[in-house]
Picture (cartoon, rainbow, N blue to C red):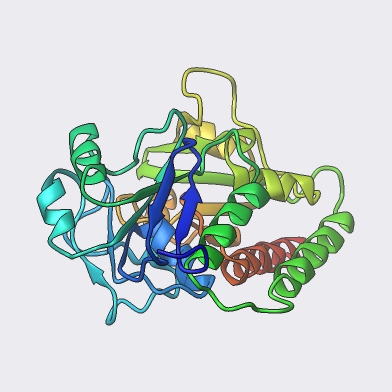
Length: 290
């Protein structure tokens, strides 16, 4: 082992992983795998969470080439042996705080870590979107991602465009509501301050509606009347597979306001982030014109 070839990385739990050379067979939680792909690293396989099924949720996979990247399952079907059967030399997972490995049972995570390096990155509310993105970028570079001069130009331009659009709006709108529909009669409405990506929108001047106070740290649970009382003029709709179709909230008709596909487990690569900001800017312009 030499200084030049040795690979080391300290994750957000403060644990350091090491290998004689940068790992090449990366198994990742699907959010992490799609983010790494946008940063220039192709994982060899990804896994889902307890919310996912036997097939990958394409709302979470971004531009990940699913024909080339294996999906090995999710939730209760995952144990250490199944994860290790893919032959990884590194596992990249995420945490929402406290070091818990999201998507795996504590037992599976512990047994996995006894056999292969595991890097856990914190994507929880305590981190800014930019900080999370920086950590993924640092990991990708350590794994050999090529330098991409100007990679930040696209998201920087998207942020400036969204800021400019927001600056042209009145103080009363358009009102943006982020939600995940549970049924035609009930939805979980996001509390903006608890979601790093939604905080980016508010920092850029977008009026993301705050739901009423009550139980629920990240979400407020509202019925149809409560949602409509918030007077949404743009909706960020959870498009993950386990969320109900948004059309159900208005019966069989399409929503009468612009809708932006929103993945509450966002991808932190620059191109994916720029695409989302662009879609929000488009929706605000459409709402303003209506």
